[in-house]
Length: 160
Image (cartoon, rainbow, N blue to C red; front, side):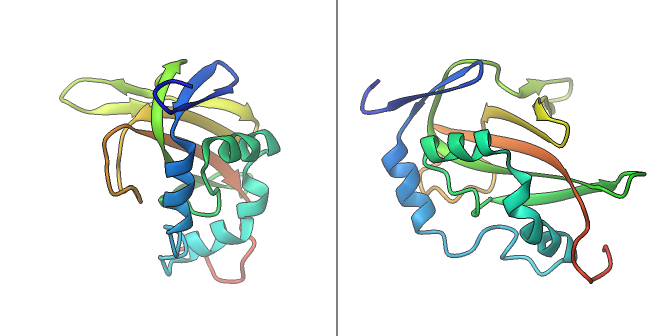
């Protein structure tokens, strides 16, 4: 432990995590970002949620204290020629990156890019010091877990 933080390792990353605070924060979330939205993109995401995250990601979320059913935000980017929908979203945990690539890369004009690491053909993930739209009351010391996935359209409503 580092200052009451648990050490969590995932692939090439090593994190210091306040797992108890992260678990407590997610336990107080009534509705995820997707569940708070009425659009068909979010409804489709919710119907796909169980199949979006590879098992190793679900295990990592458990180790970090994140409830993968309580994402902060979901974005829908495009429909690919094969019919899959390109979606992205994020979560947070209280802690720090001890070792491993920060996915946020600064570019010109005070903007940035997010560079993710592929886990499989349909899922990529990255970690950065960011606190966009968080469930945490204290926004200091947060790591934002960014992800992208490609999911089928499984609901009867038409795409927005």
